[in-house]
Amino acid sequence: MAKKKKAESLIYIGPTMPGLMRHMVFIDGAMPSHVSQMIAQNHHLAGLIVPVSELQEARKGMTTRGHILNFHLTHLFKE
Image (cartoon, rainbow, N blue to C red; front, side, top):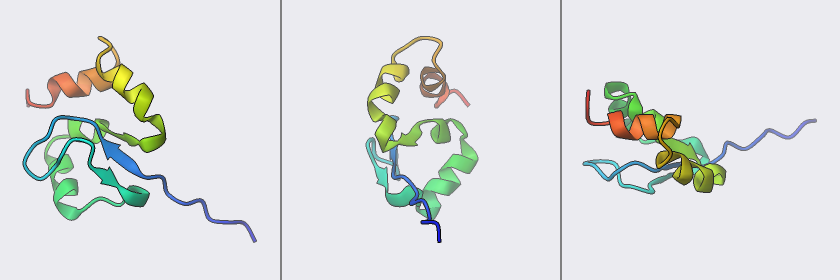
């Protein structure tokens, strides 16, 4: 019998806002309902939630002009 792959933990790398703190970790990818509601209202939030294993690269991407993470960060409050 094959082992089920465990869901990876995710981390939010955007700025702190009401209900969502910078570096908030979602164990096994499970998000509280209020965070899911926030993502439904602003899809750029979802782009700033990355696997913990990719945190170092994601931090670089946030400061690199033209990178998708930089795009989500700069457009987070424009909509």
